[in-house]
Length: 354
Image (tube, rainbow, N blue to C red):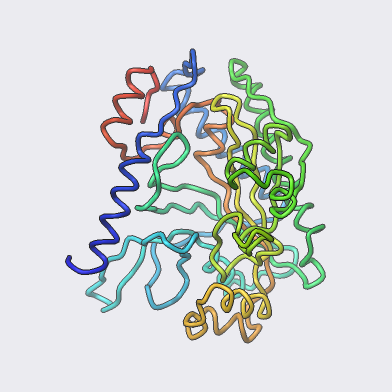
């Protein structure tokens, strides 16, 4: 294809080609489990954690789509630049997109399935993020638990957000404790004590550092951390990170991090938040120059207060497995596609990619 799209695609490929080679090999690393027990441990983590967290948050499992129609407005554009995998469906004469996440679909599903306040859903979400920059913790294949819960207007505050974060952290730590009983050779230690900080407080603490550097410095000192209020511009004029304007309320969202001692870095396990209501959607669409989305069916329902107020997020399945198993590369716990240099580096270092 010629034109601006092909030029943009070329730039993305050049950038990806550069970042694909940023593989970090921990000194003296070797997997704690063999290939057979690795598969068994992955299954145990997934089974155990979804029991723990669905019980803690009062969630019921539902089936979810792998793709949505392009004109529905239900797909997420995440940080705003990722291109979805698109394809045509001749039988229905529509174009479809593989989902990036299910943030919008879940909220619509809560309405369609008649969930009430205090109840919610979770699902296995699988996605392809073709423009992802590949490294130890990033893959083009995404697998996560996507969840969403109906709340009241009185719940739309940071105190309620913190309660839900603490419940998720407890579920992760309880899963880790049970995993150690089954596989005592796994020695990952996690802190149950969550340290909360806003992105503005983080910028004030470390104004000379980049956002990712701030995360690493802070999480190293506070090994279980929740960084809140992501998406809006800080006093520096720049946001901490990009967020689409039409699912999280930028003043009521967060990322959950654990310190990964194997990779010596902060590892984001979950991105979540209290979702936009009509007022915050209106404001964020204007700030993001995305007023064209107001005409989409999902956005129309939101602006007319026809959808329930919710909180929700995603919890990385492979990220959680690699954290609890002390893995050095996400390819040890999921099957994906890697460039030749990554494959060669990992093979030489004795890191078995699936």
